[in-house]
Image 1 (cartoon, rainbow, N blue to C red):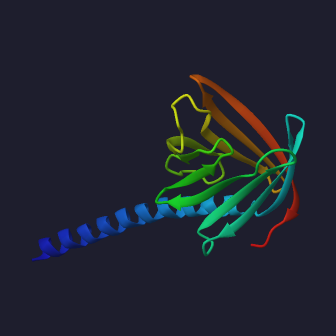
Image 2: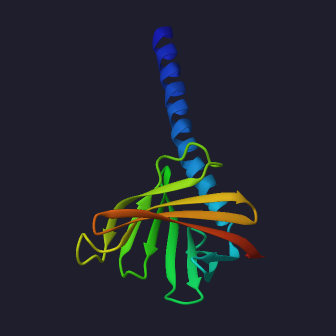
Image 3: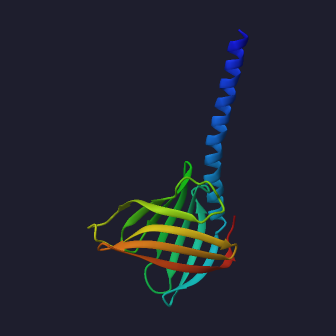
Amino acid sequence: MKQNIVFGSVGVIALLVAAAALASDKRKSEEAFDRLASLQGEWKGEIDGVKATLIYMLTADRSALMEQFRPEKGPEMITMFTVDGDHLIATHYCAAKNQPQMVTATITDVQKPLAFSLVRVTGMKSPDDWHNTGLTVIQEDNDHLTQEWTYQFKEKTGKNIFRFTRVRQGAT
């Protein structure tokens, strides 16, 4: 009888430890999303001589962060960031008329840059079409942001680096 109680107690403790470990993974992804959500507001930068504005806004009952990329010349683009279990997803609605969906690895350190890798892309007419293949979001401090976008076009790959400075804090 005592042996059953001891084994039962050990089993319950093991179950609680496992549940806490799973909850902590989820919590880290939510913390990483909250850090990303701290970008809310307006940002300015210049890309290849073209001025651009980023606007970040929480939507969908604070479950999605929308990034509007507004270049001074050219079409606007949108990227939506969401939590999915223990990682984050970024879906980019591109001026190239395709939608790459990128995901982070399991979030283990919420202070590290968020590196998103391509999972799938919709809207392409051909595998040779221009499309983004990755995004790294580097929050240098509260007022400086760098984005590194990787892309592929006709079997060639490349990277664009964009730097932005906060202009106005958004609502939280």
